[in-house]
Structure formats: structure tokens, C-alpha cells
Length: 301
Image (cartoon, rainbow, N blue to C red):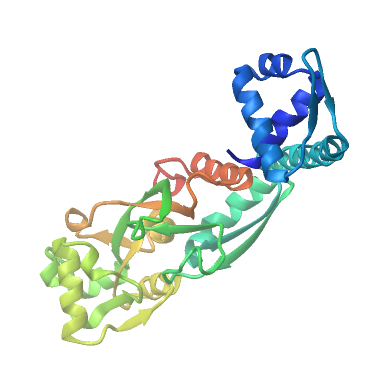
């Protein structure tokens, strides 16, 4: 039996002045109460009570033990209260990793609205598009698209991400509209550095992979906004999420092509460790993002 239970039992017996009354208060048997007190006495190598047929009295060792036990139990109660408060109030600093373009275009607005709703939560936001180790790099949560690789992490869907293959109207006028992925010119490919060609077996992805192997892409960059801006100038075709190219498509600066070959939508996730130990500040942040972006995000409406 753990010593904390033994101490709690001892304190109740001392306060009640009776093993029987202590058993009633603890909703257990008289025999079990006596057993716990005996175990504590054995552990401390000291008699804690003088027993008579009618009443029990604390020994000098018992009085000292009671004083220390009350202090220990009070400290534990204070700790539990403080931790309970910590987990129920949204306060403190969240360390967040998120993709660059998504953050500059959309997450910044969401964070502003979140701070208005939860002013006691601070956010330390680090932007990068590479794969990170959430635990080793000290993040509370990472905002990431695609599939969850590590089973030690928890992923909650924030919203849906759709892709689009885009060119400018000037590009179509000059080179014509491709009717099949095999029509895409390798030398006009604007390639995103972190594209995962092995993650999707679609005909379009296979064609892009083949084009990248046939000749160096016209431009390779680790930022989708840069690639999109180059595509606007008529320099080639680019595959990007609609949260980046959506505005250009609405304005007519870009045109989507080969829509029937576009890979299925993927999800944007909040990825975090410790399913059972999620702090309230993280919980409210993730819930806020889910409600803010919704399953069909505003840039696709």
C-alpha cells in the first residue's frame, strides 16, 4: 500500500479518535483501517497510538507524525488545486510550428482573433515547411498538412486542403491548354522543394515526378508563394494548395488546368504529443482553429 494512503488513514483515525468511526468515514472496514495503521507503524518503527478498550490516544511519536502528515496532505491538496487551476484556465505560452505560407496568409488572422478571445495565452510561433520533431524540438503543437507519420503523436483535423495545378492566361495563350498530364512540358515545371512524389499515386503526380527526372525544373523553391508569383508571370505551371493560389484564381491571374487529374484533398492537422496530458491552453487553441477555418475553409467558398 502506498504511504500516502497510510498517512490519510492515520490522520482520519487521529481526528475521529476511533478506528470504527474512521472506518465509517472512509467507507471501509475496521480491519482494513487497523491494517493500514499497523503498516504505517511498522514502516516508521514507532507506535502511533496507545489503545484501550474504549479509546485510543496518540503517543508522542503519533503527535509528531500527525503534525507532519497534516502538512504533507495540505501541500498535496494545494498542489492539486494549483494544477487543476492550470489545466482549467487558458493561460501561459504555446510553442507552435506552422507552414510559412499558410501562416502569413491565414494563420496570422486566426491568431489575432484567438488572442482577442483568450488574452492570457501567448504564442511563440516558428515558421518552416520542413518536417520537424514536435517533441525533440520542444513544440506544444505543429500545424501540418498530409498524413501522420508517428504513432506517438496525436493529430486533429483543422480543415481540408485542396490542390490546384495552375498556369497564367498568358501561358495558355502561348502554349495551349494541356489535356493530359503527359502534355506538361518538363522545362516549364515550377517545383515545390518539399513535394512528396511517393505520397500519392495519381497520374498527375506521376507525370510531375517524371518531368522532374527528365530535366531540371524551371524553378525549384521551398516557398509556394514565390512559385505562384512566378507562375502569374507566365513562366510555367505550379501545383499548390488553394489557400495559396485561391485568390489568384478568383482574380483571373491564374487558371486551373487538368482538374480531373488533381489528387484528392488532404487535411491540415494540429499535431501534438500526449493525448491524455493536453493543457487547456492547447485545447482551446486547437478548438478555436477548427471553428475558425471549418471543414470547408473560406478560401474555397
